[in-house]
Amino acid sequence: MAYDTDNIFAKILRGEIPCDKIYEDDWVLAFNDIAPAAPVHVLVIPKGAYVSMDDFTATASDAEIVGFYKAVGKVARDLSLVEPGYRTLNNTGVHGGQEVPHFHVHIFGGKPLGPMLTRSSFR
Image (cartoon, rainbow, N blue to C red; front, side, top):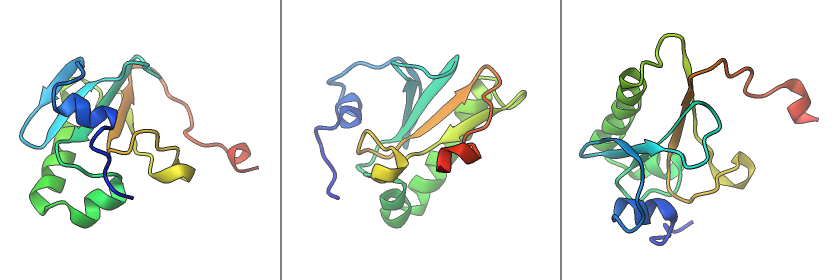
């Protein structure tokens, strides 16, 4: 799948759409989700044009990959989520539930989150 330069995250990166930014460095932008699914719900997106985790891990430079994942950890630490815990989530493709075609990781926290998937999810 080709990268869509008009996706919402590309527009946020270009400053065309505002966001509630909580962290930014050379590699990533992190901001609060506009429809949070937990008390803390942050999106971390790379500044490069990557469609999915598959695209990112296959084509990004080692520096981009390391920078991205270090930033995810930093955001979680800065938000005091390490203890008592948090969840990260990445959706890839139609079956994975990906809605925006720009690679991103969700960070959820601030309450007990329960199981991610249950056996009944597969029936």
